[in-house]
Image 1 (cartoon, helix red, strand yellow):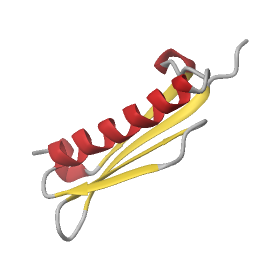
Image 2 (image 1 turned 90 degrees about the vertical axis):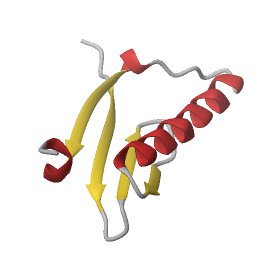
Image 3 (image 1 turned 180 degrees about the horizontal axis):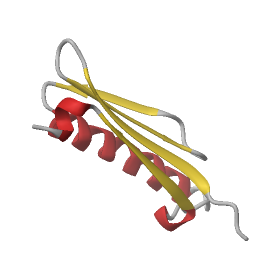
Length: 80
């Protein structure tokens, strides 16, 4: 059995908006804040994409299929 890397995506309500954090083994942690959850998510995804592109340029491509993904959502986001 192949051991998969872990990727944790978390969306959290803050006093000023939303924070999206993405922690993926093999990449530095990413945390982006914005007034809306969609803006925070877009910023976090763009940040992770830049990190993945840099990793690929170093000859270490990343593939989402290599990760077990865990999603954590703020209840306010789930029930909106």
